[in-house]
Image (cartoon, rainbow over all chains, first blue to last red; front, side, top):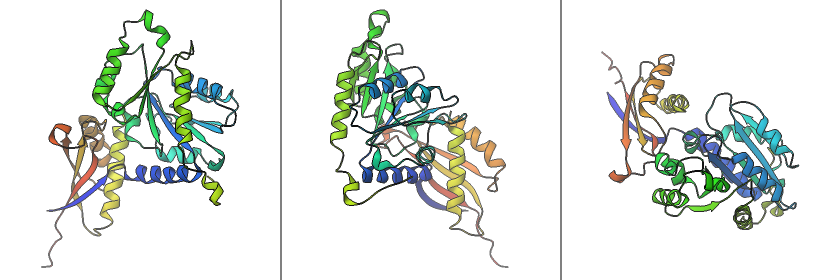
Length: 230
Length: 92
């Protein structure tokens, strides 16, 4: 027998496509964010509020992933931005190929902000890069404070944790400080914002974070005559 | 949950790598799996066994190495480490 070294990623093909998407987003000045959480933590509600409060001059678009139904896309489409549902038909995560395929027909130079709502799952989406600039993990106070310890992969990779449904804190035995400590144990630099999409608490802080990230995007490549179509 | 997809990606990656060794047969593939890669190794072994049987690479063995941060590794590994190839028959 002969052993030959390989040393490539198993998900090489996904990473290749994600790299291509990342280059396209950089060229068009599109900020792409990948939202990951358990089912039911409030990703769709957070995106609804985000679209509601977004300054109208920001050209946003949304891709939303689920195993079945286009319920989320219909909810999000009410805000007047382009929205597409990615139905994975059983797959527990989005991959870069699905994102690339669902961007077809959209002109990236016309999109300042691309919000991707991943399939509700704290494990599998962590492994698949989508070309995003940042992963955002959403944790709600109806879950356990120890989620960051139980599912460390996503909390290590996410730049921001949104602790959602904080209006329910008086009614649930959830220690917000302990959840923050646990997240920082896994990822000391993780940023944390607390929100409630019902009361509106913290949404101004979240919108400020988003605006800051958008302001940091490179000057639009379109000005240099580069345009990307899918 | 996504181990079937990972197993399928492994076979795809092995097939692609084997294009460099025309006429050779692969008997074993070595994978490095990090503790934070989000992969259940038992489930991956099972999925790999199931789908590799019906692939043109069958029979092929899977060798998993678990990578931990406390051993100085990143813990994010999901890598194809090596292939073991059957030796070429020498002309008689």
